[in-house]
Length: 316
Image (cartoon, rainbow, N blue to C red; front, side, top):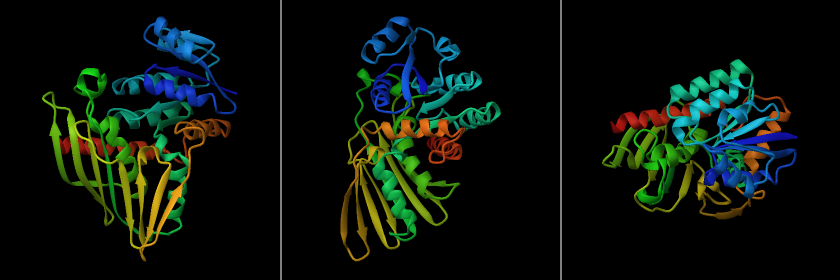
């Protein structure tokens, strides 16, 4: 039985805790917030044995096997590092950290301590995504030529939290990493930014980014925003067909279009919800003694962070 702790108790942590109840050989053991009162409120909705008003106290609990880090972006490096040093396995909410240098430091620490670490890119684990990826690997749409992704929503600054803060705010770290995950999974690395359009908030954070990246003769486009609505979709175009993925960041269906114009609509529902498969994967990795996921690898996290760094540098 893997005993989980949760660091941070925002909306994403609530969703994680709900999904965790469906996972075999895993349970919520403890939650930690900035105050014990907040931890106890979370505990009232998601029963656990312990509620801590201090993150380190949770990591120091000898019963903890794994922790889900769900604090704002700028604190990821600190608390992932402290968890690894405490020999506690880590699933860290995306983005893994603020920069590639931070991510690479966490990866190095994971290997040094011999402790599991994975970025929570849940989009890679839902059954529909695994199904379409298998079809692409079978060559059913031929060689990939071009990828487009769009994930744009209007965020209300007055009701948002860290999303609009200089440094850790902006659409790239919060939403663009989903787009970049698709490109990273299906394009070779390293990629280079070849075109970019953007809109900035008065405080300098990115409200909108539309960029083209290229590598190995393949081009990829990301569109990500806090200030407009678009259809959330990814399209992977190959030499023999294409795959269109609505809501690619939490896919449950896709359409495969072959060269002769045939459309095949494929629905592959979630196992319980869009968090479950990711958590189950981590539990399996821990049972197998792994320190790295074979699906969301350390290199993938480093590559995505590198792309964020590149895009931010292009904007500056």
